Amino acid sequence: MSYDTAYSLVYVSGSQMVPQCNHPTSPTDRFCPSCGLQITAVHVVDIIERMLKETLAYTPFNEPCSWYTHVDDMCKITKGFPETIIALYGDGEESGDLWVKYFLNGKVQREQAEIIYPIFNKSKLESPTPGKRVKDSLRIPNKNTLQK
Ligand SMILES: [Zn+2]
Image (cartoon, rainbow, N blue to C red; front, side, top):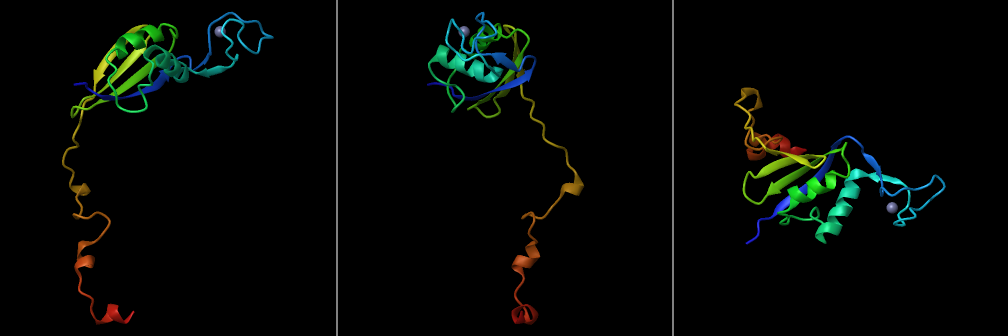
């Protein structure tokens, strides 16, 4: 049995737009002479997603899946972007298994979500069907409303 989690990757801070590769290029190059990629800056999350797809041979962000090596993979990849903080959010199939892991330069901070139920507040009390007055829907048409 596998344990599936819905993963999402979010940029937090640091270098947001990064070069497609880190090969040396000259100012006149339009494409990287080493790997052939176009010399344009792209969003760091897009680069990380591409690197993960190459590592895993699947994309872990399209639908819930088992990605047991996510800490190792993310630590390895974020070493390539040492100034950038990336958050990986997880929503596991077990009830309440909500977490975030922050990655910076090969290290991870793990946090579990804290679920907070708001306290009782009398001013928030409402009828069973919000936006609809129960008495109206139960009212029997009288002579005045039928004439309209
Ligand atoms: Zn290159």
